[in-house]
Image 1 (cartoon, one colour):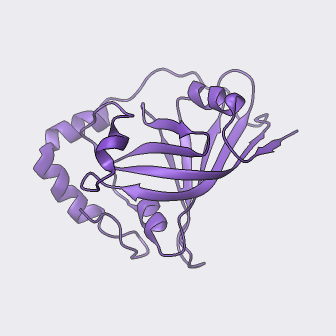
Image 2: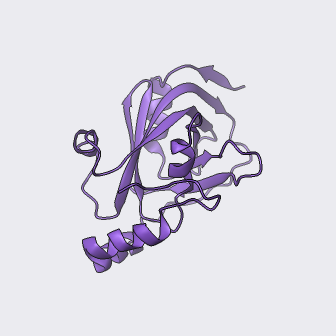
Image 3: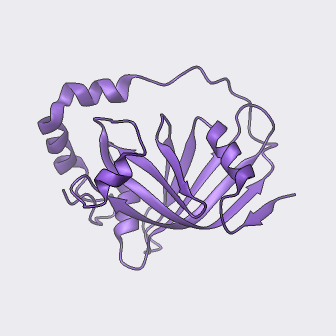
Length: 183
């Protein structure tokens, strides 16, 4: 029933482009560490080429994905897209990711792929090495009603200095003590 691909083909691209939400999973190398799974939405995901994707990483109370990607010899990440409307299907993109913060030289060029956003703390870039699809028969149907306005409103209220202070307090280290944001 499922198909495995080494890159993102047109079928995968069309499916991903139709989704309003995706999920990101990562884990530290230490087996005692915490696995992380995060939902992502808004207009944040881009397919850069058949083997490279990127998404905007917004301010949050944790920094797990960033810490896992920065961990030496790690970088493992999987992104999952599942249909909550229309035909049932699930696509997973497996690969190795790296973090690009606003102070990094490659940030301005990558940022041109996305709409401007005050809440961006980094861009996550993933080199995809495996693409799978499977049935989504067990995924319930949900109706998309729109995006939530709270994230953008909160970021505007904080202002640039408030956001920097928040990141310093909340995003320097993961829950397992791994380094997070550098800037």
